[in-house]
Length: 315
Ligand code: TUI
Image (cartoon, rainbow, N blue to C red; front, side):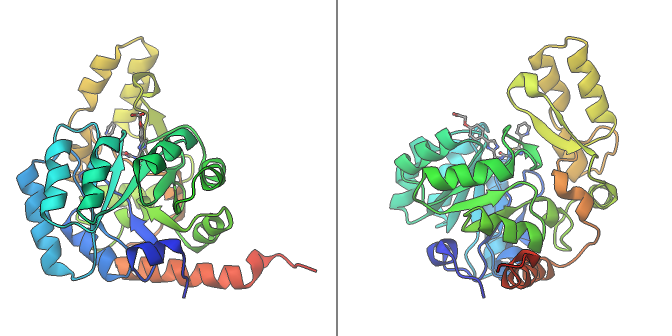
């Protein structure tokens, strides 16, 4: 049994939060992760508020454990979802792709635990000052919209910079990464990519197969010049985006090509035009399993590794 500041803060069995993957994380996955003893999340993404309200209702019917909502700060639905979370008494909010500072006080007043995802020490400090309960320090190994610093480097720097609990994210998919995160000073982890292949994850079968079939070098980062770099599995879309960027296309036209591409991957399984966001750890992931098995094996493996000091003999 592993106890950390995060299990205490959230009152959960395992210090793991599911990534807030837009177009991927819905009620079934969220409830499965929460039922497994972690914190499952519904992704607000850019979905209509009524759809998210429905997902919250379904999740409440599938679990009596706490679950969360991820809100993308750059999404037009962010203000409405910020209020919906309060109305629905959501237990945990994680945020991505921007600064949630202006909402934090209202969320805290409603008793919600606020855990922004941040890619730098400066943002971590700002979130702590604004009243965040914890932060997720996300390294560039992660899938989706990313920062530039690796998990190995950002986690200990954020741990030293703030007094609130820090979760590590980016490149963690099993017991070894989890144990490493603890060694860097993290109180827990956020896991995205591994949950893509959870049995309960409702994405198109083609997305799961892309994930299972990809090796270490199969993810690429596109769109750095737009200010919104995204990591996804190499396919025709990423090749098109890379040549577009090389040939001097504008950020606006680039974003235009990307519109709807995540939906095309997650819902339609469109192998050519979809954006199959996933992290660099994809090469390690080779089977579809229930969320419960994923969570339990991660923690039992990490416990074993830590009991043996990671295989190092200390004299
Ligand atoms: O947000 C994520 N990952 C995401 S969001 C997403 S949807 C999307 N699709 C296409 C383009 C862009 C987004 C897919 N994956 N992870 C957390 C994260 N947050 N990564 C980076 C940040 C971030 C960036 C800037 C957080 C704060 C921030 O603040 C800037 C500022 O100072 O306002």
